[in-house]
Image 1 (cartoon, rainbow, N blue to C red):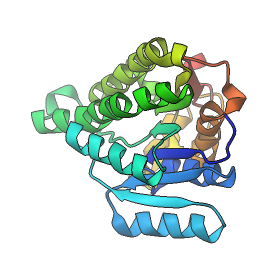
Image 2 (spheres, rainbow, N blue to C red):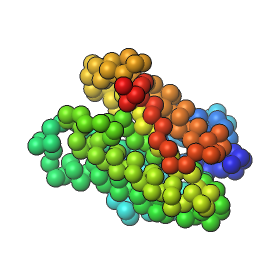
Image 3 (cartoon, rainbow, N blue to C red):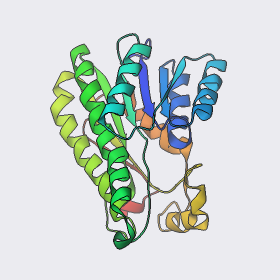
Image 4 (cartoon, rainbow, N blue to C red):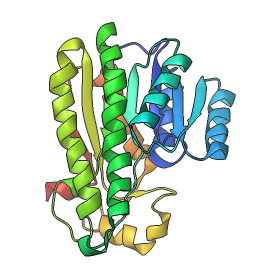
Length: 247
């Protein structure tokens, strides 16, 4: 997949890991479409990418249900002149806490954004990629989908679903040239995790690397899987967690 005239759709692309991935893809000459809820952040992200000489557009969406996913897909195809070649399912929420403290509303919110939206974005865009005979989908998961951790039942289980969907979609669309893979980050320092304070460092200290990742470090793995450097990788889950799931 050459980078000429490629279009990438990145959910949660206006901050943190998504924004870092958008910048790196744009530097490769790929037209990036970033999705987020905050219009100010979105326009700022797009303006910075354009100022660097690359092509970018912003789609504002809260990405809460199938209809919002379909609308984002429709707008992305319009911005992409009829095609989206790369889909990065990055948007997500991660409430931590005991199972008995999670409400039904919290459950629905997590599964809507973390599972339902990626599901219907793939349902809309993967067939179009298959028709063109090429495409790449990268799902952003988490290390806590791979082991039991107190307080992580809701978030971890939603990303465990994404891990299985990655394999299912690889089997479903791979023969048509669409590669589907996942990146599984460990603790990462972003705007969204700043509220964790020292808790982020304590979580990261359990891994061999002994520190949180930067958003750029996770984005490097996303870009690798999204481009032809990973041309023979289908259905894989790449752990970028400082070694936490290796021990």
